[in-house]
Image 1 (cartoon, rainbow, N blue to C red):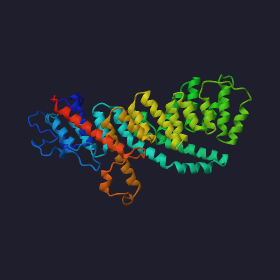
Image 2: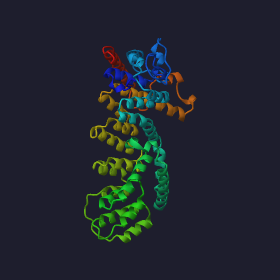
Image 3: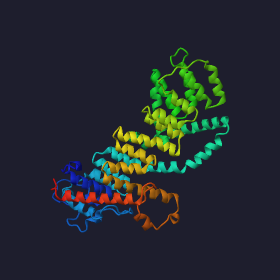
Image 4: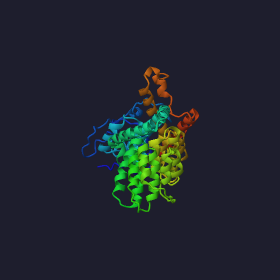
Length: 442
C-alpha cells in the first residue's frame, strides 16, 4: 500500500502538486492507472494514455494569471507519482473532489492543510468573511453617523437606546456560537459577534476567581461589551474597607453618568467625596469610554499597554470607519512584527480594509505564488459580492469581460501593480518547472 504523504516529495515536486491543487484539478486525475497494484481502490482505473493533460484542470471563470502552459508541464512532472497512486489517499481525494468547485479559497485552504500549514489554511477560510466585513464597515459608515447624530440629543433617550442595544447584543451572543467562533478559527476573530462571544466566555472565568485582579478584568470585559450597568453594579459592590474602593467608586460615578441620570445620582450617593490615588489598573480606559473617547482608549491605553484583543473588542463595539480600521491595522502590524504570524496579520489587514498592506506583506515576505492566489481569491469574492448586490444588467461590461479583468477591491492598488504580481508569478512558475524537470521523482 503506497504511503500518501505529498509533504515527503522532493521540494520542487511538492510545490508543483501544491500549485495543481490550488489551481484546481478534476477528481478523475487521482484515479490510478496502475493495474498491477495490489488491493482495492475506491476510484476507478483510469486510461493508460492521455491527450492534452490540461483537460484535467477544472474550468473556471477567473481571469488568467501567470503562465497558462505551466499546468500541463506540472501534470507531466507529477505523472510518475499519479501512476503509483501515492499523491492522495482515497479519503483525502474524496474530500478534495467535494470542495474543488467551491471556490478558490476552499482549494487554497485544502492545499495548505495537506502540506501542514494550518495557519495559512485558517487564513483562506477566513478571507471571504474578512473581505465582506471590510466592505460592510465601509458602506455602513454614513448611515451609522446619521443614527448617532439623531440619538445624541437627549441623554435619557440615549440611555434607553443603550439598554435596548444591550439586550440586542445579548441576543446576538446567544447565536454567536457557530463554526467561525470555535476551535482555532476563534484566534482570527474580528467580527463584532465573534469578539463579543469570546469576551462573554472569558467573564465566567474571571468570576470564578476571588482575586482583585480577576474582578478588575471582569469589569473591563463588561465595559468592552458596552454593558455599563453591570459594570457599575459590580464596582459599587466593592466593600469600603477594600484597597480599591475609591478607584472603583470613581469609575462607578463616571460610568453611571453615561447610562442614566438616576443611576448616576445613585452612584454619587454611595461614593463619598474622597481623594483618589493613582493606580495601575485599567481605570484610564474606562474614564475615556465614559466620555466617548473610544479611539484614544483603544490606541493610547489598551494598545500601548499591549492589550490588543481588548482594544479590538472595544473598537468593534464603539468605533466605525477609519477609526475602527486604524485599530485593526495597528494590531496587524504588531502581530506581523511582534508575533511573527503573517497569516493572522493578513486577516486583520483584510478586515481593516488595508488590502494594499496585505499584498505588500506577501510580496515583502517573498511569497509570489501566495500573492497571486490572494488576488484571485479577492477577485472571486468581490465579484460574487457585487453580482449579488446588483442585477447583472447593472454591472458594467459583459460577463466575459468581467471574468477576464482582474478585480481588486481597493483603489490604492494600481493596475500596474496587479500586472506585476501576475508577471512575477509567471516567472516563479517557470523557475519551478525547471527545478521539477531537473529532479528525478522519488
